[in-house]
Length: 266
Ligand SMILES: [Mg+2]
Image (cartoon, rainbow, N blue to C red):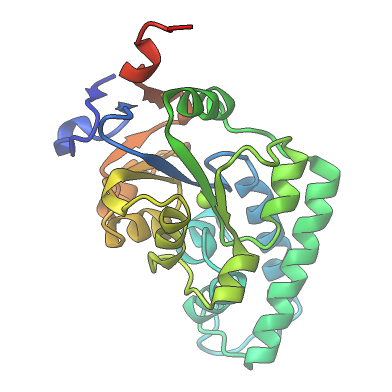
């Protein structure tokens, strides 16, 4: 696997399935997406969206111009992954030629949230391989961390994963709504997270698995955008703004900090 040096935008041929090395010299902070990067809740979200949309479309009478095929993984990635719930629901329905009033979109989005909470309660939360070692290594190296999620369930998910209070800052769906921040691919939530860490975006790394998320990182002017690709869609992540693609967080290494290597004086 090619090793991408810290702070260097790699050429296209070394950008996929790389091992990226972060250092305190090049960066102050790492801002990470939650679902699909730290926790494996993306699969629960996808199941919840599918359950809701397939149920809705199966009871809707056939209509010219409407496509009622079951919700697919491709739909999840293109229209809803990483997006605020309302935007995701509206985006998918529009892609299938289905027009409903905004109240109905809100109702479907709320139904998806109920389905997700059910799945969270029953299935629990798994950590993505490499997540915990990476968080420990970042802290040791003196790199600050923030979690960013469009989800209003961010705190609940972190709690179920045993990661409460692990991050230095958090910008979730609740905070974004309070501040009126637009969802990804707008960079607002990532910029808010960098601001809370008191670091400029160019000194911060974004780690994301969604197309909308890597696009947000790129549009926000972040120093490095790492795409996490566990499903073979690396090229698409690159096309949307990722600088480098890793298979999971074992592909993100932290260079030993010169400060930490200094002799300890009592
Ligand atoms: Mg994600």
